[in-house]
Length: 414
Image (tube, rainbow, N blue to C red; front, side, top):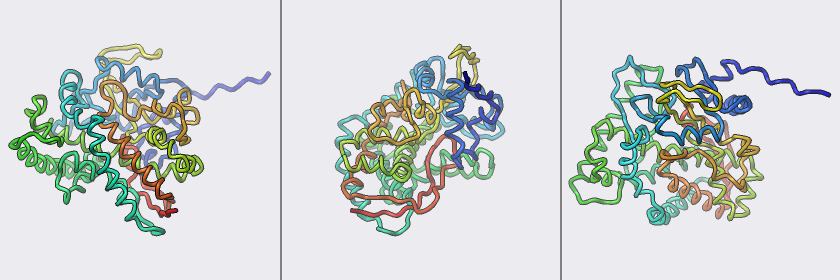
């Protein structure tokens, strides 16, 4: 009787899923994660561009880590939420933000902004989101090549951010530039790029400080700046905390939704029959939104730092170890999402995805992201819009933001 050969042991190349060149090319990343999952839920990578780290690659294991925030810390002064550590040789300001804090500091600051994302607020925003989306789609040229990222994904998400901040409309594209700058992994190895990055972030802080002072001197309003300026938990933030929370809200409100909107084009072109099934049956769109977010996973990972030695799935994680939860891998975990590389808008458990995280750090703006993406799909469906790739996509140079810089397309209707 024939027996299956054991899979070869993992090499350092297998273990290091952080390599930015592979994320830029993208072809190797998903197979590497699949191989790691076959070997187990946790893996120690002893050396990489980002130092040694644990990879957590399965759905259940990530939920365990996320569910123990008192053991696995998000604190910015211990390393924060990304695999990249601060360079100790550079004199850079700290940038604390509430997603990179533990309780109780995290709780108070998150609670301050949460009212901006309630179901009632979503209902209030929905008509405006639909109007802007419809106008934008109707303005797209038919049959001509254009960049979907710039014309659609960025314009819709940046406009929404401007509304949330009550930000000057004519300057709204600054929000996109600031978001891209804040998450620029190319600045990690380039001192000049890093210097320019901080110049831009300080310009952002100066701009928002002016808006903050205006809102602090006026009666409270429902925009995020006014909310933070008047809340006891945030009105006395240090300049560093102010900068950090601005970056969090801008990146969280921009990159995640924007890259899922771009991912919709990729899903339509890679799985045209499945996409068309959703377009032919609008009842599938609500579930299709969750499936699209799972399939794209716009933020590929979150990092934690172990506060004490702990045994997890037969592995010993030591105090101080870097623990990287790869959401992109968990959202393709075969035990939860069979054929996870396939976009299937009818997938029964699509909402079990971890793209928004889990536990106390689950994305505060998840409802707004789902609303914006859902309205985009509904308006595309009403116009019978087909979006055809007209060239190779340009991906973001990052293992944190999982998305696109450019996406050349042609559209047709009817």
